[in-house]
Image (cartoon, rainbow, N blue to C red; front, side):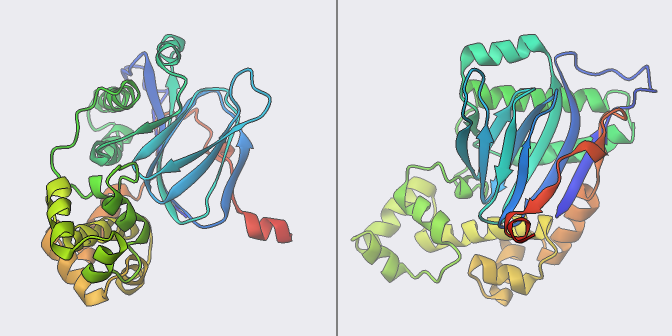
Amino acid sequence: MEFITLTLFGENNMSEVRDQQLKVLWLSGRLYHRHEVVEPHQHDFAQVQLVLSGQEYTDLQQHNQDDPISISVFANQLVFIPPFTTHSFHFEHETVVLDVKFDLKVDVLELINQHTQQRIFDVSDVSPFYALLNEAIPAEQRQTPAAALQLDVDFKQLLLTAIFKQSTAVTNTHSLDRLIDITTDFPLLKYLQEHYAKPIQLPELAAHFSYSKNYLIRICKRETGLTPMSLLQHIRLKHAQNYLEYTDLSVNDIAIKVGMDANYLTKSFTKTIGIHPLAFRKRSRSEHERNITLMTTFNRQSQPQIKNSIQHAMD
């Protein structure tokens, strides 16, 4: 199921100015369902897939290697796919992904390769990537002469920051994005990230870690600024936020998926996010439900089809 696909760039507008090192071609926000696959393919442009929630399994055919490498990409991580790199994706859980496809000059690619051969990078704060979708809409509509150029520059900065590790640590410990970052070294946070949809109470949580309740609360507040149960609620709300933005699930269904009562989810979401869940969905859809293509020469029909691996096997 696809909710955002924006293709930006008109070759007939000769006065349009674009970045000469990196040119965004396509942005897509997508919910992948369990067992969906994108079969091996390659293209002459670069690609980034940023996992917002869930987990993506990526196979990459590295240069001078016979067998592809298999990579697991978790929430708040991106995978960088250079041009002419054969790759495929599959999903074992519902996963929300921001997909960006872009032209990248050879000198920039060489600079990246000189710095690292790594292909997965942590993203401490994904909110600037969300903002790219809002930037892409005026760029596609040519609302200002520099809209597409600004999008190119902003994405280039975000990408190079992630790759070259120049981003500063998140200081706001209450950030919902930080709370679903599965790369954390804090055991309690990792446990809650993995089990947020299950019934969890403080006594059972303390027993699991062999701590007293008071000590568990103390170390949790020291590491995150929140109590364990508040931390759990924030994690659930962040996943609920993604479901609202990228799926058509009802509030009741979302509540079940994140382990909350529907009424309590509505109340907590409104208090924490500052807007009713359905109003949040409506606002997000009005901003994001677009197909943005930055180049009219970019063939959207050539995009690889998504298949269900179970159904495919039965056919």
